[in-house]
Length: 165
Image: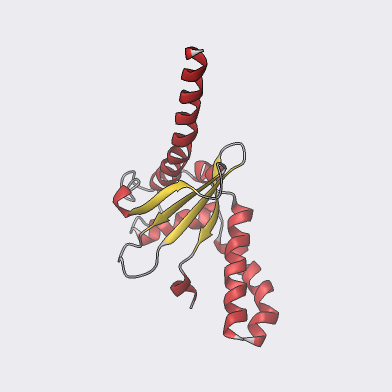
């Protein structure tokens, strides 16, 4: 009986720790410029769909009639070009001043846990939400929603409402 309790406790500890490992793995992939690992940790179609929904909702809220009609096609075109592992890596390197060459390990950094407001399961045992403070601390927080689909992957990037104004 004790052996079963030990196995169950270890399984629960492993399940709780796994998404934290996934967050760290995602940040390390960005830091190291590892596009393959970034591809594995992000559910790109789901992330694109979420950003597309946010931008479409913004066009509707603004009452921009041409934006509402042309928006979906334009948004899809932009997302297909901008939200790819290679482009995200290129943008992060440029932002950090790493240029076009190979990224320098350690320059982007690893998880800065002091910028994490909250990171735990949200909405059930297969959903994990990370609430990240922005660098300047002035804007609303960015939220990263990880989902279990055989492994923990970034499923949704929830942008701050004030960014979408």
